[in-house]
Amino acid sequence: ALQKYAPAEKPDFVSLFNFAQTKVFVEALSRVKGPLTHATFYDALHSMQNYDSGIFPPLTFSPTRHQGLTSLVPLQVRNGEWVELGGTIDTSNPKW
Image (cartoon, rainbow, N blue to C red; front, side, top):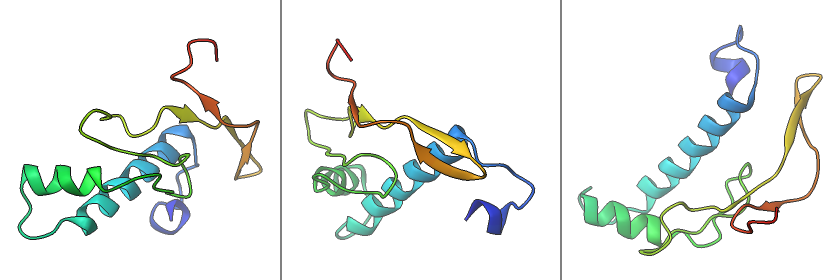
């Protein structure tokens, strides 16, 4: 998508992170039932349990879990492609 819409831009962490956040936001919007309000948007977010964006590790939102995800996968761009550098890191664990 970045190459299609912004061919001069090079992929980096910021572009990947923002694309992933946008995918999550659009998914939440697609789950809104009825008129869009704060309450219906939060209900839509809270319906996202182990949602797989294809970029972030699975994320879950709830009334007590607002961040969505507490893990990450180290990535690096090699030859214009994203490459995983290791397994998932649980950032909620203080010893990661």
